[in-house]
Length: 273
Image (cartoon, rainbow, N blue to C red):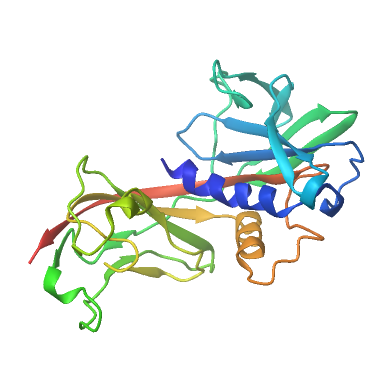
């Protein structure tokens, strides 16, 4: 699912930080890491881990936080999240009164080692006028190798009057792989089952057979409207000269991300020409 793509961003943050890098008032021996993406229509989930510094090499280890009392505050009301059975460090809201609504503000907070870990976010509106330039994308497999003429891209477009940021996640739905390029190594198939574009504040994204559409068959194409906190963290981690002395995170007394997203889903079939 899409959360795998989003969680990779936070994992990169964890692996890039050491204890002394964290810009936080928390001076304890471990640092809480928050991962949560609130989306209308989905249950509220939070994943909590902690970074543990190792002496050797200055690297960090990761352990789950399993016994925190995690709250989501909405309209002045606290809603308690409960641990998910057999899912270490994951919490879920079972209160049907907590609804994720566009343009509303939400706050997460919990106590950890004597400090309040907290963050706020606003849920973006759903993307509008989202479309593909075709629902069946024909590809000539003989025109995808090195030196071949680049095929016209598949275009995802939408309205963006306020220059908001968006990403597209492409999920291959077929059980068996049918690669467009027969030279694609089989051990890379799973890598391309679910791929993401970089964030853009434009009104379209091009998908190609060299980056996102690697197989014949059916796809789910999801356009996500994302908030600035996600873009900041993504760009910070993606820099080739990464400076983590002040990691970009919207978590007070911790690291990670607590953010709102909203999406529109389209479906696509890629067929051989």
